Amino acid sequence: MKVGIIGAGSVGSATAFALIMRGVARKVVLIDANEQRAMAEAMDIAHATPFAYANKVKCGTYKDLEGAEVVIVTAGANQKPGETRIDLLGRNVKIFESIIPQIVAAAPNTTLLITANPADIMTEVALKLSGFPRERVIGSGTVLDTSRFRTLLGYYLGVSPKSIHANVLGEHGDSEVVVWSNGDAGTVQIEELAKMIGKPFTPEIKAEIDSNVRNAAYKIIDGKGATFYGIAGALCRICQAITTNEYAILTVSSHHDDVEGVKDVCLSLPTVVGKRGVHSVIYPKFSAEESKLLRESAEKIKEYSDQALEIISKKA
Ligand code: NAD
Image 1 (cartoon, protein in one colour):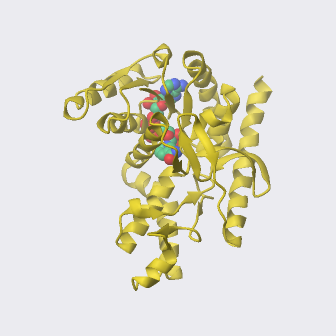
Image 2 (image 1 turned 180 degrees about the vertical axis):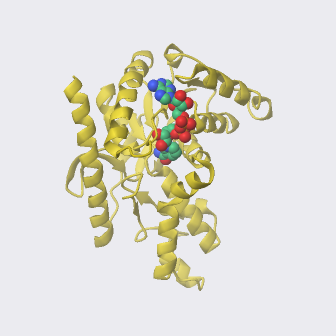
């Protein structure tokens, strides 16, 4: 199966590498405004294929997306010093206005997987610009944040992060909700498990884990300028769920009619993902505090999404 990637920068190239090395895609097409960059990344990754799977990675044009099951959109501007979030949004909407119609024309049956930031808002923008049904426009959402949470819990509890079912929901960003109340490992609620093994989660430890999840991107960007391996792993996992029709539950972002009273908003909830994209969404029980935080997160996304949609409708 074919996966297209728009934007062959740090995230796009790391994702292509992950897809190829894990054998998730038979063919990866890298497209970038900087053709030389796309060509160089494709060439470099292709030279690793003899050590993994005999799959193909090439640079290309939008026409080469024909038949792609998934098209990942990583192309997006990053915030410049002194630039407001809305200025950035305006620039990213402009980029999406040029990219999305070209994807739709070349691959009308594909599933869009949006990761450019601000990810939930850009997922809403892609939904509007593509005209696709909502189940075929997915944001990477908090799949990465959830994996950060599970990694930290796994280290603390001394169990594999793969055996932990605990999620980060809401916005992929500062208002994300780290959900403690319904996380479990081995069918035991995580806080109960921590007590059982003699390492209870004190308020200080919970605050530290919460902060390390929420502020991970800032720390990584301080150290190396960008984050890309974690998100590449997350994007590869989402693609695998789609291409194998797995019905995996992942905290992707998609459009919801109502989240805690906020109407028509894209954010992350536990979602069953398969060949049709979003198959169904699971709405968990939250503590009163988590419900409040989720509502605040939804309100924040909604405010910016409305502004982004207004930019589009003014031009229409
Ligand atoms: P980058 O600057 O390394 O790469 C972006 C690429 O997009 C560049 O190669 C650029 O040439 C290309 N591009 C720009 N406009 C284009 C257009 N109109 N058509 C085709 N290509 C175009 O950036 P990056 O580090 O790869 O990050 C990409 C995006 O992903 C950013 O918005 C970043 O904030 C976001 N991101 C999201 C997550 C997440 O969890 N959702 C994690 C990391 C990064």
